[in-house]
Image (cartoon, rainbow, N blue to C red; front, side):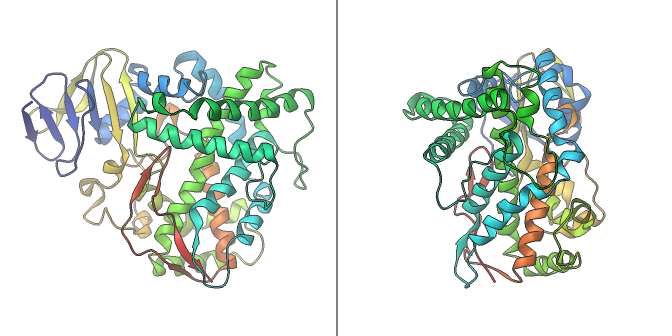
Length: 437
């Protein structure tokens, strides 16, 4: 198949139904003749916001998730999606995420698991277990206790099964036929469903069973949703639709942040100075939100290491995108009904055209003047923007502040270049090997 290049943003094959948008110096692979990969901010705005009714989720994503989840906020469109989103939205209102006391005991356990003797520790699995505990309590009222030295058999079986599900869903994103070959999939899915079903039963039959809190009344998503319906299967799937992506996001952001901070002592020292200026007391929602450099560090981490590397949509009907046509790629381009459009966030966030020649460098100072536009979409944009984005940023900021209050120095114990591990989220294949003192 002949390939023609037009400028630095458009590569077009001679086939009328195959269009690939990407920087010409980046390797890309076409899966079929009805797929396009887009990194044009104008097109992304059209796809995600301006022309939302002409875009839906691609069938592959819907079918992939239905193997584990019924229809819900991750894989539905239309009125069902609007209703599911409305039921979940109250969970992430400011009044509920500003209560950082719900994270304290889990961070205390995280700190207790980090050595202080200059020995090497891999922070990535520690952050993963931390976020499993905090997110499970936030959503269902009870933690799975993955950081505890002794765990119940029920919790341990759930953790093993859920890890299997998360790992395999990540592989399915790269190879749709993987699930047919995995013998453990059905057993893991059944174990996760059984565990969640028990929590659903408690929410319906024993609504006051959530863990005791010293911070007043808490909003618990499962408890509130149980007031709206007693359909236990629906409740199971709607909780999993939030827990599945949510449990990974803050943990992955924390791992990527400490991976980069360990390699840049100047940024570490400046950030720690701002954190210590808060005082030795417990960080609050207001103090975290007011620490400008902390916010800039997190934005820069999300730019360099986005939580997910791509997103996909399918054209519900014939339409056009504002860029991609013509000899220079600046004219509108036609998209046929059913055409799949993949949005490459890694290419978008590292584009030297959009971010400058230092686009591949970790430089939080760029956010002193940079503004978040359509070239930066770490939590999606438009009507499907991630409801949990503020919770992820606040929780990550809280954990970073607590760790910097405890440890003065960080040193990387892995000098090799980054190698990514593409699962549900983009992680470091070798973990985050550091020493904290």
